[in-house]
Image (cartoon, rainbow over all chains, first blue to last red; front, top):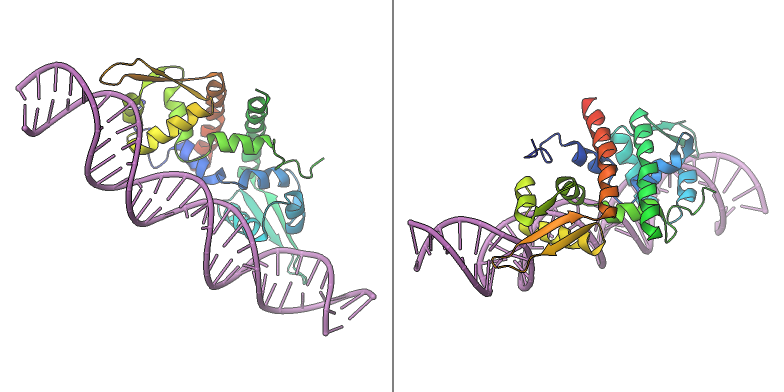
Length: 107
Length: 107
DNA sequence: TTAGGTACCTACCTTTAGGTAAGTATGAGA
DNA sequence: TCTCATACTTACCTAAAGGTAGGTACCTAA
């Protein structure tokens, strides 16, 4: 039962890591939360992220159905980002992930 | 309250990502579980991992106090790996992480 | 001798992730 | 005109992650 279950094409742990791994994705999901945020709002909430990385990661999150992008079609551009149902489920992961980090730091 | 909290030197989400991120760490922690496993046992449980990566990741997990390594000092080498208290807390993260992956795949 | 076992180490390489800097297009205001 | 705002795009680069292949040292068995 233990064998070959982790890296089968549908290994769920790996799936999650691929969806949520990397330096910025969880932080972006955390900032959007249950709101609908402008690109610039996200950027100001995470000051250390570059525009290039934010754009790239938002696109990936959209492609992977964790975030939805709504373009108002205005000039200057006005675009909103909010979480999908999958994104909201990922949001629920963040609290235990943060809790682990908090207790680890406390040592 | 939302500002600058994510990437402060003690940002707990980033802490967790640094401890548990990467291709192999959660899988290794998952395989060790509540047991004490030999190097080769872990390797056979995760057939796709190379010896180099397994050695490297186990060392990192040990350095970061998630795994403890017990060397019996025998020849041929006999070494056991088991989870620390921190490692067991990380183990508890795996179920929700797997559940997210499972429900994501089902879409 | 070879082959198997144990748990690594090292050199070198490829791939991936992330970064910096410059740029785009439009509108409004000074 | 320049400057600010909006949300990107592109080129090029560095750093990090991960991989392959060869090796170490010792033991036992064939």
